[in-house]
Image (cartoon, rainbow, N blue to C red; front, top):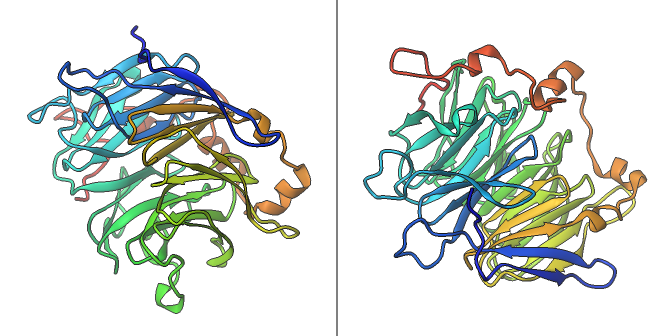
Length: 388
């Protein structure tokens, strides 16, 4: 088991005032001796809390142990003619809710599902996909939404939906996200609009032409707060928006930078972190009924754009074009949250407890639906039915 670190690994304190946050800077080891450094292009957090998947511009995925940051598995060989992984930039990755499957996609038209129970061997591969910017499992692991550099939203899964390929008005879709009850899917892209879909029928929930664009420029990332109607979005206009997805209304916005924002993540029911082209991570306290959304901290250390964020427990991970992966301990920052404000910050919806247990397994050993736990081969039905 090899370390991913180099002599450049170091600890650093950042933050201002009482919010002093310790970060660890790590460089991924190249697998090719001719490569000097590896830029982080995408990340995915293990829902069990043990692993972090990190994709590099060498077209290789590294599976790291969260606590030690040691390398456990290397997926793919990065070669242009590879048959064991990706051959171009990996733009997006996502674990299913059980943590047993990791899906990856990017510029090469390959959509790959990796099987954790078999040391992340390839479980299924589709070679007919377009270039994809974002893929997400639904909360039950039964469907995957995929968007990319086209106007199509793809809905793929075991159960065929009435509409598996949906043409949107925007010709450059960059992000998608499911609400935790699985009843709403939101996509965004170049035109600055968010579009809301019923993921079962594939139909739009509302006509977006009734609304002005949420962002003035391309939307780059969106994320729901856990078990909440509140949706966060960031874009190339440098703003973070807090949106009530039930009413499809912008409740709050914060202008963070004159640069572009590429990624956003909820770190608590009260706080979000956004990052982008100006090397900085922005910690935002979300709006409540009694207070406005506001910037409360900036985290410095990267020396390049930050396209990827991930969160496991109280540890925030950021991956940058400066060829570093940073591990931030934000436990002290999260302890400043106020339970009363937390209740106000969330837009709760009724979530059946049986469904919630399927979304958030109580133990790592909980069995997923049987249909989703079978290996695929040329003679077996695949986990996902291609929609591309």
